[in-house]
Amino acid sequence: MRRAITTLLTTGVIALPVANATAAATKTKVVIRKFTGATYQVDRYGPLRVVITVKKTTKGTKVTRRITAVSVPIYPNSSGRSSYISENAIPILRSEALRAQSARIDLVSGATDTSDAFVSSLQSAILKAKRA
Amino acid sequence: MNAFVEQIMGMPILVDVRDEHVRAEDLDRAFAWVRWVDVTFSTFRPDSEICRIDRGELALSEAHDDVRWILARCEALREETGGYFDARASGRLDPSGLVKGWSVDRAAELLREAGLRNFAVSAGGDMRTVGTAWRVGVQHPHRRQSVAAVLQVDDAAAVATSGAYARGDHVIDPHTGNPPDDLLSVTVVGPELATADAYATAAFAMGHAGPEWTARLSGYEAMTILADETVLSTGGFPDV
Image (tube, rainbow over all chains, first blue to last red):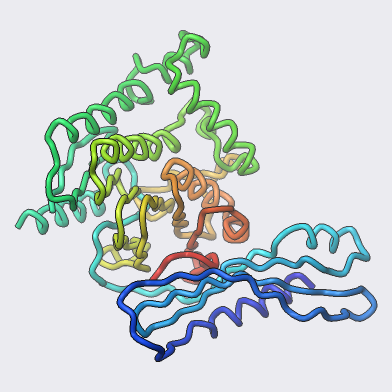
């Protein structure tokens, strides 16, 4: 049950970011809102209602919406397992394939041992680029 | 734009300043702080407080306040992570996993108190940024010339990555003693580097259970790259 809900919402997240041609603004505006879904009866188990928290970012004419949290304030309460779920937000994860990019960046975060050559070298390259 | 680097704690400590003016004495104070941390917390210097505590030569009650605070925080994180962040995972007392990020957090605070408003402090792949619109790349685990994601982080953000692709496996699951084999890296973003770094280490050690654990964290977002090259990010992970 829980797995199914998580998967469903994950699919929803991937589809969510949309471009919107509203009035142009130069500043980035971030609005975080909670949305409560309708209450459904889940077979014989009882009512289910989902609340999602959506972060809406408006940057110029580009609007992106991203679900940042999902919680289930009303959930079938007929077993120990489901009462556990009703007290805890369902974790939401976006899933995508690994990409490789070479975008403009200021710093690199990477796993490194004490003298990881790559990160040291990259940091020093950035250092040089900035002094040039 | 000015950048300053010094090799401390066995890694390059980089201070990258975008403010127009930076006083030499303010930079000196920040670097001197990191050197003091190294002398006090090093696991390689036999006379450090950490080595002396580990050998039973220094009582915790006699240790520096910062040493006691760090060891208490390590214990709290060990409990919070179900034992996956463990300063004694190697069998010896080694709080380095927390100390590195904490020293960067405090260095950033010193620079902020000195009046700087737009800068980053980085310690070998983990960083704390102050000011707006810093773009941080997450290293691609297989292609060393590429990044797997680009994050845009805003004021006072920390980014830490744990992974197995650097020199050998240096994160182990404290419960099994083996490195996890189902993840390539975990990147955690949040307000404090000390905590972000500890969470990244713990989530990496958890293996396949790591992503779901990160999705429950409060105030911290994470991106996990699995061995099958699937990338799992929490809802608010700030990639662009």
